[in-house]
Amino acid sequence: MTEIDPIDDESMTLDPPGTIVVLGAGPTGIEAALYGRFLGYDVTLGDSQGIAGLWRSSIDDELPVAPEQCLSPLAKSALRAQRSEELDITLPTTASAWIDDFLTALTETDLLRDRLVISAVESIDQVPVEPDPEEEPVSEDLEIVDADQLPPDFLVTFADGTTKKCEAVIVTPDAGELPIKFALPTEYWFAIDSGDQASAGDALLAQRRRIVQIFAILAGRGDLDLYRPVRL
Image (cartoon, rainbow, N blue to C red; front, side):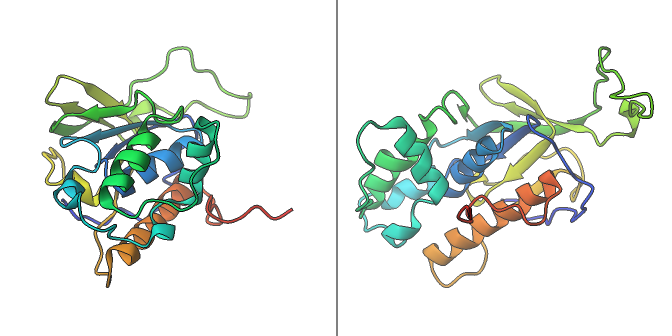
């Protein structure tokens, strides 16, 4: 994986339904895609090895994280919305159950269905933003921003011929090495690294905190955290 820290710039905002490509369909990539979809973004999830491909070598082993850590509150909500019966609160105890019964199921929910591209990334390039000829000022006091003044979009090309033009890219630890055709760091490119945590569970929780940080930047709201319980 290319571990490049993003530009920490509070001006890197992106309003829904802005387009985002998340690379790596492991637990963290699925979580990042889910988080973005809960906020209303147009998200594509891509991985050359399929769902949790890097985790399948230990598919018959015990769950590498504590059962209560394997699904976030958002993941549980997405699964409950798709099931007529109550979600099994005992949660998985093996890697196999985690991948097949929960992570795969999340990609089949309404939020992520048809948003998974299983193919290697052939190239990632930057392309100029195309101006919208129908765009008009919101009021007489506001002017349309020249497209030449905007950060470029990203063009992600997959080996199966799929192309995705997007405004932001989130790279997770499962993405592997990527054929990037521009210099990093760059605006709207966000990396979630594997970290130096004592356990897989600690790493997973740290990566979720990074997801919160990324979407708080995009929303322009430092206090945005979908994992916090709603207080009435």
